[in-house]
Length: 279
Image (cartoon, rainbow, N blue to C red; front, side, top):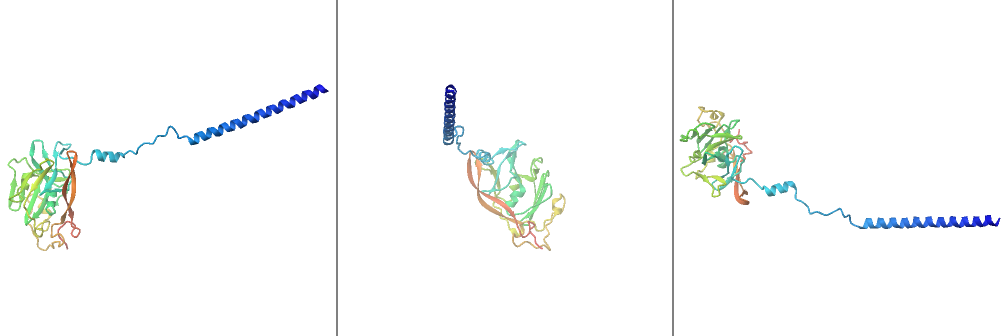
């Protein structure tokens, strides 16, 4: 009996010791877990590195290619230039050009040139013909025709292969035609060769210039060459010119730097819609 009691006592003590051992392990494990959690929460993530902000792709492109640099060669081998008239750049995407076999003879977008003088033009749908009036003198230009008309003058180049051409929806005339605008009209290149230039002393009288008296028959070779103004009411806002020029400060990119310039753009008259006449 005593042996049984002694064995039971020994068993009870063993169970007590096992229980204490398990409780201690759990407490230690929980403590270790808490310590690990504290370390993770308070240490910065080693894999995260702050990077300086990078410029956008659009900004990088703009900085590396801030604008069209003149002169440049287009896909057809023509050398393109800015258009500057009497010291003011004309705002246009119809860039004047020279041809490889005519490096000193420029071609000018006639409609942009005439707009610069405050004169609207009448053109056909494919831009192969242009007509308008400057100081009562009718101007008619036809693509691929060696003959141009300016009032009572018929103008043509010595080389009949030098003719007005249509490129990308714009009619271009050889530079010699613009030399006929007045007795003191000079075509040339700018000093940095980035622009073709026109210097002229022509003075346009808006009251006898523009589209008043010009009709579609003047866009046909051999058609009417008479400017008839009877019965038409000239727009009092633009004087019959069909619009006006707006000149602003601008700049162009050349040889790695911005060059300041004055730029002129043509605005259609809101009263007559560019027709030069009102009902």
